[in-house]
Image (tube, rainbow, N blue to C red):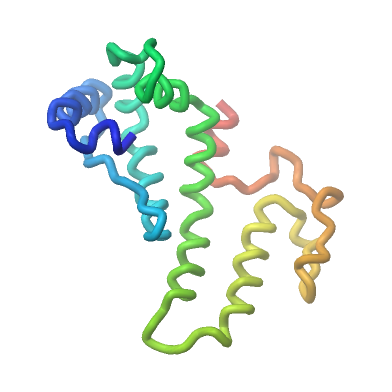
Length: 166
């Protein structure tokens, strides 16, 4: 999405018009940089904020039926992708908190890394697995399949749950 708008003032102006049309405040499309791990959350949040405008823009784009980038983006702007993004929006703050602590440079944190990794793993596991079944001394021995939460109790965040139930 970022690549589509990055160097084109005309496309950005068109997106602004679609934002006005769907009553969404226009904001710049952000790019995720793989070497900047913490950027993913901001990119996901921005795409979710602009979702209605992006869907409208790409559905009405003149190249939306031709093979290529525009059609690929249009096909990816569906409820499944939005659910995925909403889940990322829910879970990434936890991952980013760990990542920030891991990258701290003002003091040596290597001695805290194992405990922080266990906390992160437990937090993510609790989204999908019955909390009482998580082995507190050895997370890796937690039986996953037999303790998986059912679809109604899996923790995916309020926004994702609302979309899934609609």
